[in-house]
Amino acid sequence: MSIFKSHITRMSAYTPPLEGRDPHKHLLLDFNERTLPVSHHVKQALINFINDDRLQMYPSYGDLTRKIANYVGVSESEVMITNGSDQGIDIIIRAVCTEDDEIIIPCPTFAMYRQCANIEKLKIIEPAYRQDEGFPVNEVLNSITPETRLIVIANPNNPSGTKISCEDILTIARAAPDTALLVDECYFEYSQTTVADRVMDYPNILITRTFSKTWGLPSIRLGYVISHPDNIKALLNIRGPYDVNQFAAVAIDAALDHPEYTQRYVKEVMEESKLLLEQFLDQQEIPYWPSAANFIWAFPDNPDAIEQHLRNHNILIRPKVDQSGRKGLRITLGDITQTRHLIDRIQEALSQQTS
Image (spheres, one colour):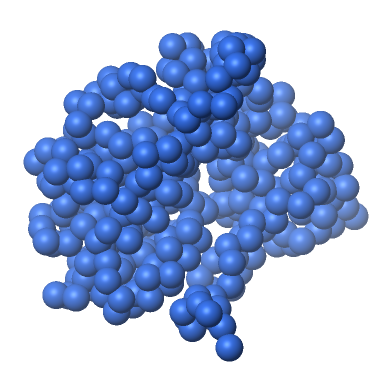
């Protein structure tokens, strides 16, 4: 007999395929991470913190929330820092929803939304993204009922990279003013699309962001929520006082002081690497979803063979199945040198298939 809630024991854990990934051996194009090391400013700040003999103290965050708010362009009262954006997602779902409430999660999308919804035993409604049509705005609007407590919108979406227009998000917010909208802007720095400037006008919008992807700091776990100050006050009742570790605060503080390392990387990925890979896929007539993020979801004829060939050459990418069961390959974009290397290895795999 289990001591836990029965639906919890029937669930499966969210277990990304992390085993065997070695940044010194592999080109890691499978988790949408930054593919280059962080700046020396961030590394030195962490070294200085360790040498300052403060590990025995509880975290204190100083003006970190204010600095993040300044970066976003909102007031400090509209921001809450979290232990990665995953914690922000979890807290929002827990704060908004009660067992048997409806939650709309357009799919396919990031697995943590469903995981958190299942923990709270919610009824999940899943409108489908379409490669030709993108975000299913009309299907989402038609799915809203009096029992709908939360709508999740990943912008851009993962794994498809689909960008959702701000007007579509605001249309949904207006159509369901008593329903919360969780807008996950995890890849904001790549897409440059946000509704952060509208949270005072639309208090049902809650935005999650992270320093994991673009800033290259997933190992230390820092994200943040942007929303109306009343929402932030309520969410702080759930988040613990020390949930964000001091290493994260120190690293992000240094990163925000020197944003140029991130800005240069984003520019190269989006203006050079992305265009080069798209041109190659077009030339090879390999279909892919239009992407506003640092990854492309492509559908070659023999994805398993290509994935294995890349793995044999120490390049890791992520197989992902669409709604119809068709397997694609989600490929993270690195710098231009890494992308050229990737394309050469894909070309080899394609040549082997035709020989």
